[in-house]
Image (cartoon, rainbow, N blue to C red):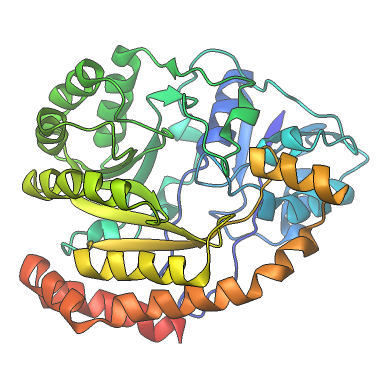
Length: 388
């Protein structure tokens, strides 16, 4: 059996700029089924090359995994290329799994709703490890980007964000905690491979103080450069201090939209204590959420610029299948089509303008220079030049 991570990477003018991340979900499927894995995305393979490779190896059973690098939201854009690949090899035993096909009850090809059970280990020996590299921002300190791993410590999320579809994968809002001994073993394993840059894949790593402390204390001596997701209401000063000692240098917080004055007041302390712990912040914002206006989105940009986060992501909010927002949209419109996203062109234009405005800000660049030196500023300027 072969598990495939299809390639929907956009051809880049500067191909070494984006990160290339190990396909965690596909890896877990391959590990559970003791299958081979083809990471067509990491290898930048075209559809015909993937088909040719599959036929040359004489595989009969092929599972196509439709998942983005973010555990939630980002699998929908991969669906067209996944289906195109399936159509090329439809004479084989082709099946689908992943967030988008499960969310829409995909039925053109057999759908595997539960592709694995328990907590498989990522099959690092079957992946093209030399191809993976960390995000540029994770290495703004000047460290090498080569060598990148994605490790999970839990599956699922207990929260119910209107725009999120992660629950589709699990059918509930429970968190399934992987045994800490297995987590520590995997961190040690990737470090032995010479990998230093690591992403903790969990939708939300910072949930339990004791668990976070146990893991981080066990990996203190591995000298890793880690980033993870956290909620603004789930961290404490002690947790942050322990994370930093364990090698977590970046935390991604979801600010989404700063339209609630009380919310803004409450997060100020979290921002301060994260910075005091020496952890850099990736601030995630969403433009075009239901009920928000362009002025609200501008307020989010102003909030970001006033706080000089080390990095930001500005996203265009969309009702991806599996979210409450999607269910409400379909109920009203009676249909769903990828073309629906075309109506977000104005929001996308603002998002692009906001992105350029933030990273072009000389005060922001001055902050980076003071923190990591001129090379950090050069990285940002190269990113801006490519974007233009």
